[in-house]
Length: 172
Image 1 (tube, rainbow, N blue to C red):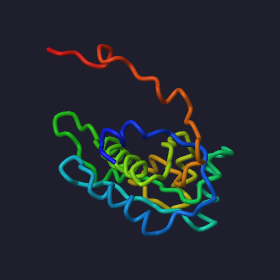
Image 2 (image 1 turned 180 degrees about the vertical axis):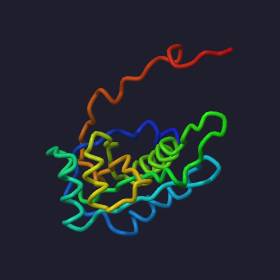
Image 3 (image 1 turned 90 degrees about the vertical axis):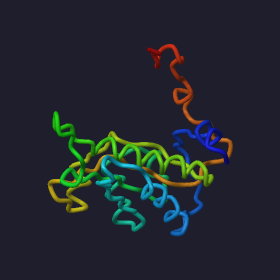
Image 4 (image 1 turned 45 degrees about the vertical axis):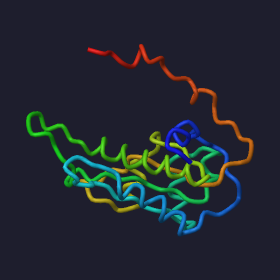
């Protein structure tokens, strides 16, 4: 798939088949995050792959939605604020930005491989932090359910609304 096609095909999918996602596929997906750029190349991320029933239950409990429970694998994207770059003149922490870039690399790779996911940020981060026993510097930022999309599933139409070029850009 060419990049333009991948970008156009990417959707927030909330319906998954029963087909399992194998370890090799997950590793290919994670490789796309490993190669993502980050501020000063600090790579302040860690991705937890949840495949055990105990881990999947903990993730599902942090975001209790029926559609979410159908995924076979969950990735938890965490940022380490002790490792992230801070802009010297104002201290701006780029951890969130770095995680967002890596997660979007994952989302595009998932699309390219014929799988599906959906960014989930509205979850109980403290519950995940306790489950993973993360240090204070580590923040769970994004949950990504992974699975194969139900055939002919149309993502929520809200995902297709985009602002016009004139609304998002200004040439100076």
